[in-house]
Amino acid sequence: MAPSIPRKLAICVAFHYVEARFPYLARVAAEFPALADEVDLTIVTNTHDEESRARILAQLPTGNARCSIYAPVGLGHPYLLTWSHFAVMRERVEDPSFTHFLYMEDDLLVRPVTIAYWLEAEATLRRFGLIPSILRVEQVPPRPEWYSTDQVEPVSIARASRVAGSQAIGYLNLPNPYQGLYLLDRRLMTEHLKGPSSSPDFGPWYIREKAAQGLTFASIPYGFKSRTVVPFDVASKSIPECCFVHHLPNTYALDPKSKFGKVPVSGLLY
Image (cartoon, rainbow, N blue to C red; front, top):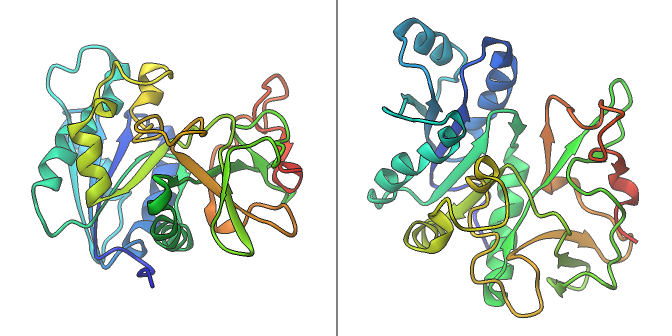
């Protein structure tokens, strides 16, 4: 049986310094100590100002999380900030005590139940060459209904590339596999860092989004459109909430002009 949380988790969060985003950073960071037995957190930011860095550290948790800040020198274009986390991850992977690696944007609420889901699903999907994915979701407060951030229309289970995980649970490709993060164990992280997926020239997305693709488009199994899959309940044709990650600003669901964030998760699969 897979463990419910990793033994030691390295987390990198890309945070372009904007104080108005502190509430998002503080909220997501509050969950970090519960995501692993031991957590090493690095905020990758563009500010070298000591007072600003102190304000960032004030948003971060205590407990079992070791917190630090990494600000690249000579960044160039601000869009390259998301790629700066690779310098940290390459250093962390050299330490054999780290078992898992999480890169994420600064406004995604990752919960312990999601980490537990990923660990269990990864053990199931490994033989298929697939990797568990999360589903970014948003709300229109005060309504509690969840909307898919990235899928713009309902998805046919019959037409989607999929595998059976168990009698009750299957896994399938979504048309838009963007997650805003990646979570990898040591085996997968080594593949990522040593392979083409760690190059800004790899993959179909724009430069900032590519930094979060992980192994999404690397070594895709035959018959699949990406390497990442989400779980679904075969009987109810629903996606379990354990893989939900809340995009806290609800940016797309609240924007009537955006095509994103409009499909209710309850009706995403048919």
